[in-house]
Image (cartoon, rainbow, N blue to C red; front, side, top):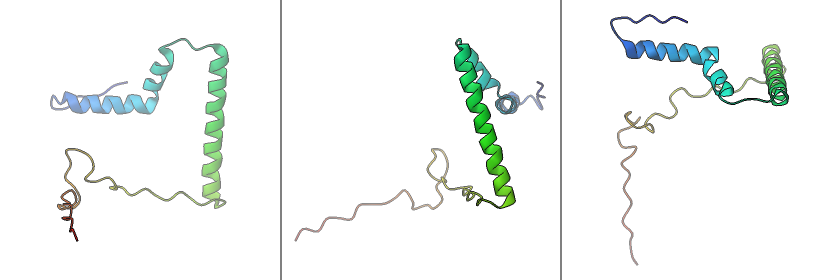
Length: 104
């Protein structure tokens, strides 16, 4: 695996490397190899992964053929304003004040 460092920007190169490693499944494999896995557990895991892949493929085929409805797309910026360090969607969103209680 190779990542080019452009303009001495090591942070950007590290982000690219991590993304490539994530896509290749290296982190998942490292986590699995951290401890010994019994052969029976390994077979069960691999069988479950195969079933999951087969179901996903069947679901995609059914969606493509129109047999089942496609899932609704998620809104791209649904969580805007909730993450720290990012400005909120509207300026008065987080500035709600409690109404004064009126005693009768």
